[in-house]
Length: 290
Image 1 (cartoon, one colour):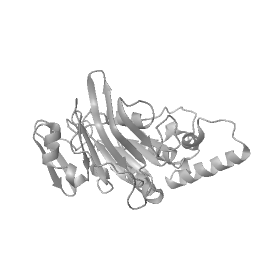
Image 2 (image 1 turned 180 degrees about the horizontal axis):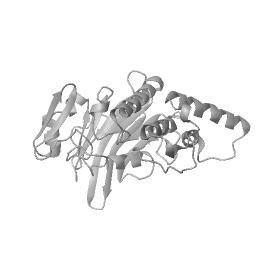
Image 3 (image 1 turned 180 degrees about the vertical axis):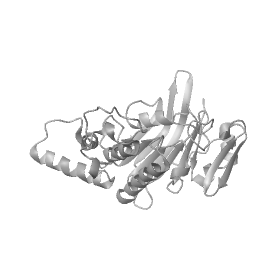
Image 4 (image 1 turned 30 degrees about the vertical axis):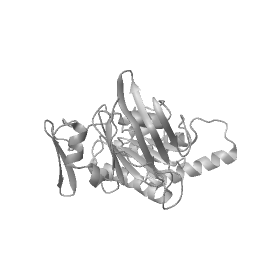
């Protein structure tokens, strides 16, 4: 049985607003055969809260996303998203995946891609429904600065432009929870800042809870309210300054780990890995999601 230490106290509601948690896990565990990714995980994410999910390859970060999307059942415990059990295609959830290049010949315009986040699984909208759809898609495109390439083939757009459209697609349905699975991977610094700014603006304006899986915390460090750090079945949840310390990470990794602050950046150095939060692809104990 894996050990949970340092989980935060369950919070039934946001003390400032009285609203229930946007996302809640109680005694949650997930195992594949004899391998337990994590167990006895208690986590409440309040409306408007930004939680970063960190950990090495294989620690279960992306798997946690799949549970919240209704694609995988828990092995134990309970999960609620906006007060309900997660399910495929839930309008309460917006999802921003990793940046992946689209086929240059894909017969899909920018506005079509965004529209899939609103009603791509439904057909037969009436005239009023189609008018509302156009209005909401146009508003989402404008919010991410994508209006001028809304009618361009998505496969011909840059990676940064495509990722802006994915953010718009995730937000067009007005979700209560935004799940982001390595959305900054393969983006340059400018596009990273654009994507994080769009997500931050949304959660502050609309109270959307954000669960953000990331390889490196630095691009979102100013935005993070709490960190969930997963390592080999163990985890720690808390504010960045409490979790991202040499003592805590050494305990999680069961080896010597140093956490340094260099010019407002966190640099994590493992005993055998060297610097671990510099760039994706380098040897690290804070690798890409899996």
